[in-house]
Amino acid sequence: MEVDDDFDVREFDGINIDFEAAKKAVLEVIKAVGEDPEREGLRNTPDRVSRMYAELLSGYSMDPQKIINGALFNINYDEMVLVRDIEFYSLCEHHMLPFLGRAHVAYIPKGKVIGLSKIPRLVDMYARRLQVQERMTRQIADLLQETLEPQGVAVVVEAMHLCSMMRGVKKHDARMTTSAMHGAFRANLATRQEFLNNISRSRVMLG
Ligand SMILES: [Zn+2]
Image (cartoon, rainbow, N blue to C red; front, side, top):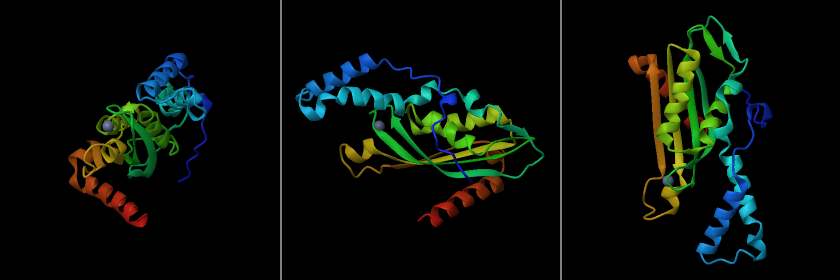
């Protein structure tokens, strides 16, 4: 599968961030920790950080209908479609620290399929927000369920959470796996097992 990772401005409705407010807030944090906001390395940090948030949180301004636009096809195909190892980077909403990992997405069509490169973009749209992994997993599954009305949808997300790794007692297991299943994946053990076998095989291959 080929995924075009280029940023597509047509999917982007502009950056809905109040840059001045964000810059001010970052400046306050720098002062609050006792740093000198005027020293060279920090002088442009409020500006850089607010631009960074505009990028990392751009998912709020992405419209799923624009992402999907024109990439739904009526096809008589009813085998499992699987896109695995979709890399994503998100920010946990509790600490605004990154969590990152891979999403595996499968569905069994009922007359309708979606262009393969669109699925990573939809994952990205939900990842680039203040998130919790459980909700992100469910949002991806629900969107595909509503859009494709397939026989079933399955999403598994594996991620590492920097807020667990960097803070407190670092013994905390920072890896988490979440899943959301609809339709055949929920109802049929063999279908679910086929999906899980497929994604575990990919994990072995990648070490
Ligand atoms: Zn957190």
